[in-house]
Amino acid sequence: MNAFSNVDASGRAAELLDYLDHADRGLRAPKAALRSGLDLDPGSRVLDLGCGGGHELVALEEAGMDAYGVDTSAAMLASARDRLAALGRPARLGQADGAELPFPDGYFDGCRIERVLQHVANPAAVLREVRRTVRPGGRVALLEPDWASFTLASADAHAARSVADQVGADITHRDIGRHLRRLLVQGGFTEVRIEVELVVHTSLEDLSRMVSLERAAERSCASGLLDRSRAAELLREQRRLSDAGAFHSTINRSVLAWACRP
Image 1 (tube, rainbow, N blue to C red):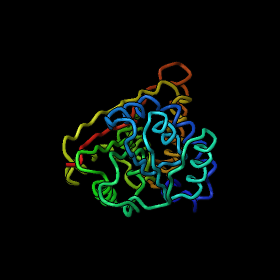
Image 2 (cartoon, rainbow, N blue to C red):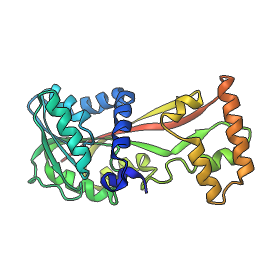
Image 3 (cartoon, rainbow, N blue to C red):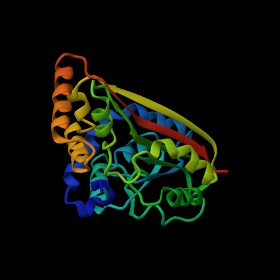
């Protein structure tokens, strides 16, 4: 199980918060697009479901919204509270499961969900709660990766595929990005719009900020999909390609979705 599925029990909260700090810098463009797509006026009440360290709560407040954050992790909420307080922003925070939100029907004008559904047990149940707590006509905005879209260029296609298939293998719903339209439509939302951000990595160093090929290769070997000598040769090949400026991998890093609550 991925540590983000239960941050407080993982013993890695500080490490995960550092990761979110880095991700916030790397995802500023899709985050801004997500925020814009909510199409809300200043003063609107917005829920950030799975608010993590509170980066987006600050952005929403700076855009004139009344931002509310929920997260299952006490450590994440403490970080969000500190971040908001340091900037003189109100902290409207609560510890809650996304499938059981502590808000009345139609309480919010909009809701954002970023890189959360990939980790929850039942994404459809979370979206049902979002539909309940967002007012009719309100919008929901989502951003999720599609780890299953990862590709790696190699002379050994079988080894590359075996390793690629293990990227994000510890994530509950590693291919959630490609299911957002279905989940939203089946959840009763309308006017569903999807955009995909394809990211091309041209060096191992660039890729390592997001994906560990070594970890994926180890999983592939442990699962019996690839022998260790072949995995080691693949990793050496990828280092040679990276050093020569010929490295190539791709992933649908961000699948952005917007929908209306009818």
